[in-house]
Every structure is written in C-alpha cells, then in structure tokens.
Length: 204
Image 1 (cartoon, helix red, strand yellow):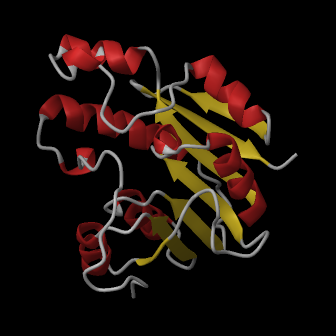
Image 2 (image 1 turned 135 degrees about the vertical axis):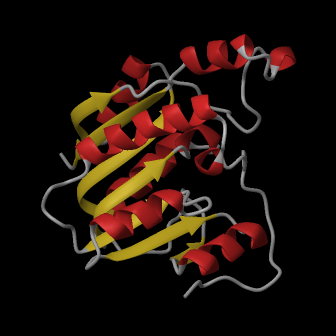
C-alpha cells in the first residue's frame, strides 16, 4: 500500500526517470551504477530497509527482489505521479522531509539515500536524520562532480548553467563527499560508477 493523499502534489527536484531510459549509453551507465550498488549491499539480509528519495521506486523494487523477506519503506516529497508509480509497483511509501524523517530512532537495518542529497537545502541535517533512523548499514550516492557537469556539457545539456542539472544545489567531488559522510558515519567503502560517487557507511 502507499500512504499518500490522492491528488496531492509537490516539488521533487529533478524528476527525469533515468532508470527507464532507452538510450543505450544511459542504460550502460545505469548498469554500472547498479553493479556498484550490488557490491555494497549487505550479504546478510536486513529485516527493515528505508530508501529516502525513492523517486519512481526502481531502486526499492530491486532491493525488495534481493531481500524478499525484508520490510521495505520508501519516502519522498509529495508528488501524485510518483505515488501512482509506487502503487503500480506495490511499494510501501510515505511523503516526508529528509531533514525531519517520520520514523523512530534506530528503526531500519539498512538506509539508502540514492541521488537525493544533491537536492536538499540542508544536507548536514539530512545526514543526521539518516543516522538517527538507521542502526547498521547506510548507502548514499550523489553525482560525481565536476565529472557530472562536464559530461552534461559534452552532450550539450544545461550549457547555460555550465552543465548543472536543474535541482542540483549541492556539489561534491568523490573525496569531498566521502569526507562529508565521514562527519557523521564511519565510511566503509567508496565507489565511483561513472558519473556518480557511492559511499557505504556504518554508524560510528
């Protein structure tokens, strides 16, 4: 089921569905992304999983397939189209703010924030909330800057914004994102599936 009011809408940042792209280059990039994700996910099945910034639900659907016995919950900003996608996939999702998550402390074994922190106004507060609601494993990914913007410019996208994707208000290099995550967590590993940075972390 999906805990969303019918007809409610709201901003969700960059809503381009890269997971459903038929472009062969984008599909190749996403294949590398998911390969990296598979490598950092825990081998021992978590019982409870939260994905913050669930989007259309592609990642949550893959996580649910990998851990069929786990309780998987998604969260995103209010958006009726996203809610419709969640219903189609049979995902359990709620509306909420990453800086004030509507869950108790230590509620989830695995917390994911995939392609969301670059969109939020206060990433430090968001990181603290992720740490609060999780108790074991964390996976976070963001665009790898400046590689992301250079790649956009090379394909003629967002030229007047110097390659910055609309909705991206935070920008990290591979090193700076690992350092940022390290302010709140113990960083276990860092991967760079082009053009992203992915960090696997644990509580300190």
